[in-house]
Amino acid sequence: MLSLRVFRDAISKLSLRKKLTILASVGVVLPLLVLSYLQYRSLADLQNKTKGAFKDNLRQGFTGLQRQMKQRLEDVASQTLEPIGGINLSSAEELEKYLAKTKLSHPEIEQIFVFKYFDGTRGTNKYAYFYSDKFVNTAQAEFTASESNILVQFEKSRITQSFLDGARKYSFVHHSCPTCPPTMHEGAYLFYPLKDSTNAVERGFAGVSLTEQFVSDDLLAKTISETGGPSHTGNGPFAVAITVSDENQQVLYSSGAAQNGYLLESNFGPPFSTWKAEVGLKNTNLDALARNGFLHSAGSTVLVLLVLLLGVALIIKATDREAHLAQAKSNFVANVSHELKTPLSLLSLFSEILELGRVKSEEKRIEYYRIIRDESRRLNKMIDNILDFSKIEAGRKTYNFVEGDMGEVIEKVLSSYRYQIINSGFDIQTNIQPNLPPVLIDCDAMSQVISNLLDNAIKYSRDVKQLSIATEIVRTDLCVEIADHGIGIPRAEQAKIFEKFYRVGNGLVHDVKGSGLGLSLVKHIIEAHKGTISVESEFGKGSRFTILLPLAR
Image 1 (cartoon, rainbow, N blue to C red):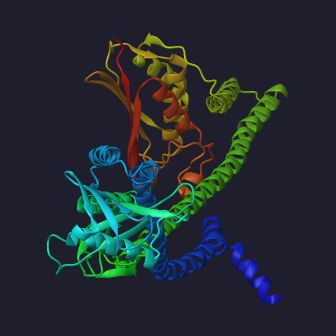
Image 2 (spheres, one colour):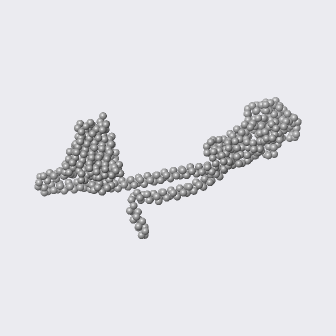
Image 3 (cartoon, rainbow, N blue to C red):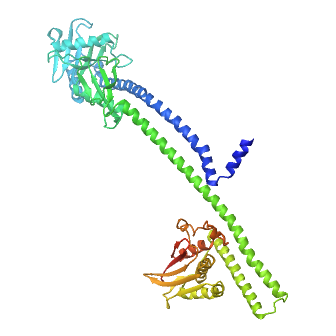
């Protein structure tokens, strides 16, 4: 209990700003630091998992790629080969016409051919109908090496079960033989068995050989681009390098070289079992990619933390300012109460003395009347300041601008203050130019400005009781300067003296009671007249307030 009491006493002695800082540190900053640490650990784990996730993504894309390739080849086979099933193979003219038309309309076909079983069964006696550049009807005994190779590839597709579709209508095989003679055609083949419509007996087969350009540019490059998106062909950090080669290491397609080796090496599934794909990153490596992802995520986290901390700092500042404003309002009420009580007490005292007839001297009576008048004026001025401030805060303060003479306004204010100035022992020097150019002013408001500045000069002067007020024309402005030799204003607080309720924080100032509204009203009035007010002051030596008002055009 003792330690708790000591803790409470220590906290109660701290300033509001320190209390807010401690509260923000314990309630906001510490949780943010803990969350930041956990986020860092999470990002570090994510960096390690990114590599595996990237490879898994490549594998999934690889599976989708094969599915699209099979569909592309199935479309070609259905468009070119399936219609042959409805043609009378005994009619060479009808067959030749179809083969020529199909070859012409499908540039991806290098050769289109039909093998017919001569005796109606799968034996050794076969006819071959070719169409490359011309129609050739060849018996098996006259088959060339290329035609015999087609028979071999067809049987190979049957043995390996390299079908494209679930119905097992179309098969695909890729023949690669670097040592074979040029007459033996290498490349990709599509086959379609031809069956009798009545008894489903196989009566031959049709097929096409595909151009190398189609395999490279359409079947592989285009499908890879459509499946993997622009990242596979671009030059960004995620650009992927893919190389597809056959069983003899002949490159069928390549989008570029991987910078730091391949991340994935995988054989294709049926019907592309003889092909192998190697996948890597063009412009970076997986470690750098994961590290960049970590850095980007960490940077975003740090940015969010900075924004949160900035928000906390702004909240502390705003709360501290509101607290100071509340304290200033409290001081304002106390000061105004004292300011009101003093003139009211004097008014009550001297009016009672005069009412009871205790003053026998006429000179004393006149002095008391003058005191009552001065205190009434002081009280009236204080009330005017409060009412004007209330109107300004509510946005209801209005001004009646007319072309006026600031010299007359100043003389009028000095005349009303002359007794107070002389009675307080002040020496006032004036340098007001005659026939000043007119300015657009509200005479009552400008009188209030001069009155407030003179009142401050009188209140905050000590031993040297000298005042000066001067006017001059500065280019297109009328300049009014009011100077004193009072206690001055510290340089650090000169920018704050025009804030509402603000009073300079030193003992000399607080020896004199005030509301803290005078200079705030002065600034508002001057700015409403499109003018400016500034102060030059040296602590202990006095202050000079300079007003600039635009001349009336």
